[in-house]
Each structure stands twice: as structure tokens, then as C-alpha cells.
Length: 144
Length: 144
DNA sequence: TTAACATGTAATTCAAGTGGTTACAAGCTA
DNA sequence: TAGCTTGTAACCACTTGAATTACATGTTAA
Image 1: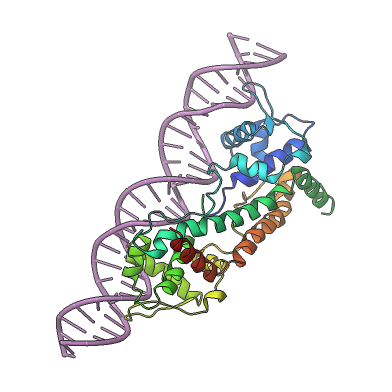
Image 2 (image 1 turned 180 degrees about the vertical axis):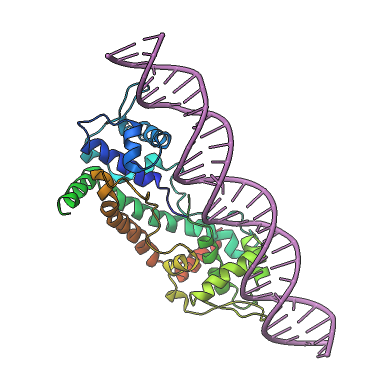
């Protein structure tokens, strides 16, 4: 299966907070832009808050960015909204047969390989910031 | 969620075919090493067959490698057992609001970014072969 | 020509994750 | 206090994964 759309929605939210920073970004307003419902937005916004990426408080309308645009990488967002912890991108079959040479050593052999691949993915996400995304959005909007 | 364990099981199967190449690798035998059931092994073996990685025929006991060990990369296995096609590692939220600057451009903006990340992952898998894995398994087995 | 065994595959079950939705408690402000 | 907000919990429908069962099909050897 794919990586949850929470990731792309999280990026959407952060970009919107910047582009609409003059306005009040309630969960209802954000939900209309994303085209989903406010409860889901509040859930994801809560995750972004836990990661220190946004400011949002009960009763007070609107979320705001908690860090500089250029200080938020997609990797930050990825970690913020991904419930699964690190080193779990690849599912490894459990309990192979220890009586078999392959079964006995397969896990220890492929885990570091999977780690390298996962780190390559994360590195690629780590070099892109929300600022880059916002620039991309504004750039595309101009040329259309 | 994670990438299916079919991937690690596929690697397991191919490694076993090499290490036990003197024996007859029936789905039942392989299932015992992986610690699952023969039907699942046959399903995955079928995928590996469709990708041209193994030889296996109805009625004839045992699967064999269809290519040189060093000619099979983990990326080949990844593609063989992954039902989802390329460019689908990251789920992108559908139908954002076209009346919003962000909604109108977010998809086109992040898709190429996701592609770069996905390609980084695939590149990391592409440089490791089953031969490397087999060597790793035998190496680890020696030192324990 | 069967009997025994292998693969191929469909169908079923169970569990887990995802996203959508409703509902409501708790907090804030005019 | 009224009316808004956020924070959550509780469902639901849907999809996928993996395990399992069952059986049709193919092969081989007695």
C-alpha cells in the first residue's frame, strides 16, 4: 500500500498557512481547500503541532506556522504525520525458520539494506522545504 | 503503512533457491523456511515467474532461478512483487479545491518531489543484488 | 492407467490501516 | 451567556495483507 495521504495533506496545510497567512486558517477553511472534512484536518494539524511545526490552541480560531518556512523540510512533515516509527517502511516477514541457513540469517542481512534504502528516501525528503513547495505553487499559479 | 512483506519473502525465496540449489525447492519446502503456508509461496513465486526471475511449472516439483544471481537486483524483486505500479509510493490526496491557489497547484508541485524521493529509494535497491544477499547470509552464518 | 504429488488459483476469513463522518466536551471571545 | 473554535472519541465503509482451505490442472512413476 501507499504512504498515507496524511503526508500530502500535511504539506498542503503548511503551504496554505503561509499563502493565506493574512487570513484566519480555521480547520473548516483548510478543509475546504483540501476538500475533506474539518475533523480530519484537526487531527493532522494536531500531529503537526506535536511535531512543533504549527501553533494551534483550543478555542482560538486558526493555526499558524511555528517555524520559519525554510526550516521545515518535507522529512519533518513525513515524520510528523507518519504514525509508524522509523525503520518500518519495509515490512519484514517474522519468525523465519531458524533451522534453515536462510531463515536464520535473512533478517539480519536485509535489515541494513532496507535501512540504506529508507535513508535514501528520507534524505531526498530532507532537502526539500515547505518554502520550496510554496515557491513552486506560486510559480505554477503564475504560468497558468 | 509499510511495504508488503512479499518483498522480503521474495528475497528469501530467491536466496533459498541458490543456497539449496542441490535440493528440490517445492512450495512446501520453501514455506517451511519462510514459516508461512505453501499457497502464499506459490503466489509470490508466480509473481517472480512473471518477472522472469524464476522457472516454475505446473505439476513439476520445485522452482529454479531463471537468471544469474548477480543479474537480479532487489529492485527487480521489488517491482515483481509490488502490485501497485510506479509513482504510487506516496498517496496524494485527490480533488483539492481548484478555487484555491494551493489546491489548484499542490498536486503538480509535490508530484515531481515525490518522484525524486521514490527514485532515490529505487536506486538504493537497484545496486544490491541477490548475490550480495546470499553472500551476506553465508557470511553471517559462518560467524555465529 | 491409476495413485500420489506438485503447481495454479479462487474463495474465505481475520486483522489492520485509512479516510469520512458525527457527536460532543472543553476553551475562547464578543 | 451565545456562538464560535479546537480536541477527541466513536463509528462506518472500504481496502489491503496474510493465512488458510479447497480444488482444478499437470506430471510422474508404479
